[in-house]
Length: 402
Image 1 (spheres, rainbow, N blue to C red):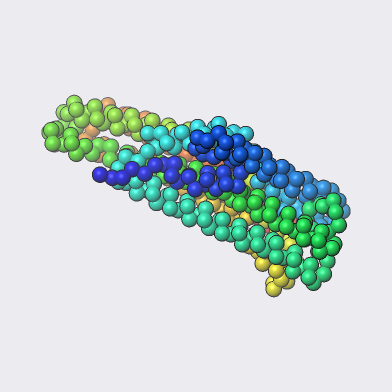
Image 2 (cartoon, rainbow, N blue to C red):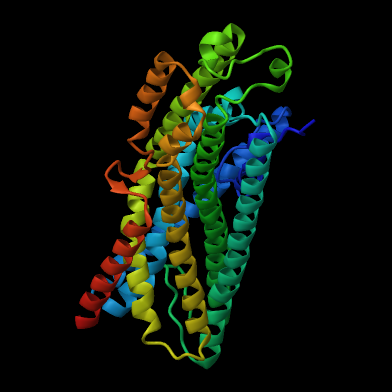
C-alpha cells in the first residue's frame, strides 16, 4: 500500500516561516484564542516597523533628489521594500482567496492516488523546501553584509545612512542605533520577501506537478483496473468500452475525473495569477530598476571593499528572485503543452468512435496551454526574464550618461 502524501505538506514550511516573521496569519488557524490574539498583535508591530522604514527612505529620497549618487543609494533599497510591501498587501488583503487555494490543495482532486502521484509530489516538496532554505541562507548572508559594510566604512571615514533619522548619526551612538534598526528591519523584510516569493513559486510548481499527474492519468486512461481485470473479459477484435459495460462505466469515471482535474488546475493557476497580479506587475517593473541601480553602484566600487561584496550578493539575490518566477512559469506552460500528447498515448484505438469524440473535445481544450502571466498580459517565461535584463541594461546606460 502506497503511503499518501498530503499536498499541503509542500507549503507547510513556507506558511510557518511567514507566520514566524508575521507576514501572514498562522495556517492552519490555532485552536488557542490567546495564541491567535498574540500573533495578531505581533503582526501589527511588524506592519508599523515596515511602514516606518519605508517612510524613512521616502523622506531621504526627497532630501537627496538633486544628487544622482545619493538618490541611487536610497532608491535601490526603497524600491525593493516597496515591492515587499506590495506582496505583503496581496497576501493579507486577499487572505480569504489564499485560504480557498489551500482548501483546493487539500481537496480530493489534488490528492495523491498512486505511486506515481506520491513520487512526483514528494520530489516537488523536497525541491521547494531546499529552495526556501537556500533563499533564507542568502538572506542571512546579505543581512550580515548590510550591517558590516557601513560599519567598516565608518571606521575609515564618514558614512551616510540610506534612510532618514530624526537624530544625529555622525557619532557612534547615533550611528549604532541607526545601523542596528536598519539591519534588523531590512533583514526582517528580506526574510519575509523571499519567503513570499518561494510561496508564490510553490503555487506555480504545484500547478506543474498537478499537470504531470493529470498527464499520467490520461496515459493510463484505458488501462484496466487490477481488481476489475479478474472479472472482465475484453475481446481483442472489438471496442473495449462497448464489449465491457463495467469497463465503460469505469472509463467514464476516469475521464470525468481527468476533465474535472484539468478544470481545477486551470482555475488554480488563474486564481494564483489574479491574487498576485498587481504584486507581480510591480515585481517586474521594480526588478528592472533595482538591477540597474545595483549594477550602477557596483561599477564604482573597489573589488576588495565590503560594500562591493554586499552589493554583489544583493544583485545575485535579485537576479535569482526574478529567475525562479520565470523558470516555473515556463515549466507550467511547457507541461500543459504535452496534455494532448498524453491523450494520444492512451490506448484510444481500442475505444469506440463515440468515446474517441470525447477525447477529441478534450484535446481541443488542450491546444491552449496553461500560461501564467504578469498583469494578465506579460507571459511569465524565460523570454520575459531576458527582456527584463535587457531593460535593466538600457536603464543602466541612461544613468551612466547622467
